[in-house]
Length: 281
Image 1 (cartoon, rainbow, N blue to C red):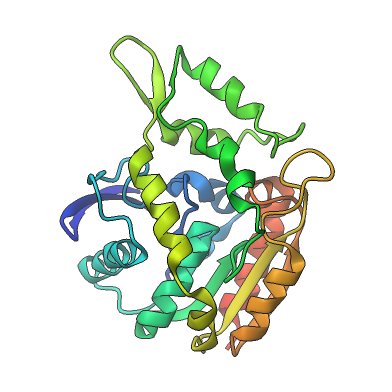
Image 2: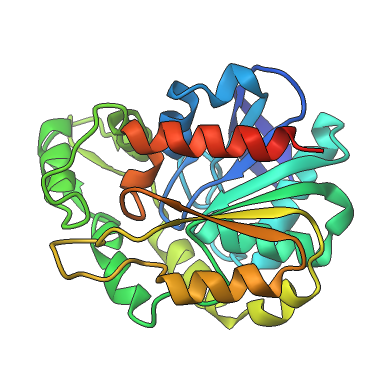
């Protein structure tokens, strides 16, 4: 299931969950890794379909070049892997940053995409998105005494606010490396993530979505991304703008927030929704 391939001058790590065709390729969020989608796999997305999930450059076990974190760089990695695997066209999906990357690829390389699954991402996010995702960025560069300390801090993320699903722990275990002295730290390459953030926000997504004509579905979680009263990462209004801009796109609201929507009972709803969408003619 776990593989490493030389792609676009880097070593790229990905998971290959076996299943039926068509193949679904999933791209994770800004600070996430391929295991971000373990909740969907557990809920049955595989083996219903073959599912490929990537560690994008600078994340997880994929190589971390000093620079080169534009959307074009990320897209070249994704397309390079498809070339190596001999896959001409996929159902492409992404969460958050991965959703923006999906939009980018659909606009620039439409021949590689059959359908699109946009998970809590859109041409416009909440104007306070940098502030909302800051707790996820705070783990970059920090050294923790142990796994137990690391996961304790993770559970304090305001986005969870009393919620926890054990399935999410495999995602966070994939996020860390254990040092020789027993300490742990995130595998995230901080400088790369910051560059990716700045580069991603420079892209004209509103122009991109206006020329996308692939069938698409946008899954939107409107739960508070933190304590009660905190806004969602993708408000309903911004989600609808993207749905209306894409020629063939539908909207589905998913229970939970930007993270919790991928796990537990919400993951089952996401899988059922994706399955229906993929199997439609």
